[in-house]
Length: 159
Image (cartoon, rainbow, N blue to C red):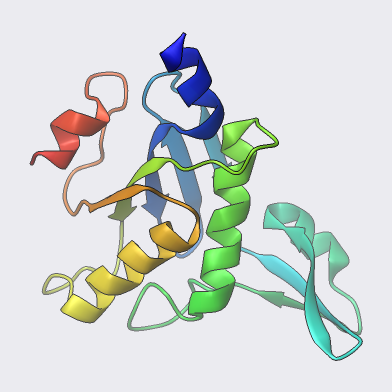
């Protein structure tokens, strides 16, 4: 019973980040959510409002609506922290299938722009992105892709 109740509030997942694709994969159920890191932004009453996320954002391209990719930068993976956080929060909520705000354990896995390793600042950016999405635990993974069918969160987090 505790496991069923906990699944309403939490899950374990891998978040793979790339400039042109974000992928969230749950460990237990192997559900996958993939989307383009795009936001359609409009200014209403002096504030930016998100109109659409992912590929759907392209259809909102018009005058007064800006299409933004917060992961598009020539040197680092995260170009705009606030928008990247909103984009990941949307994915975490979509994957939870619950009206209650989830508190998952996340493994953040940047897939590109890793030449020379990650700086302390980049590590902090990935950790803060996950925490901003409501994660209760965060692990940063650099290396081969994680197969959620063969490993669980604890096995990867202990590496």
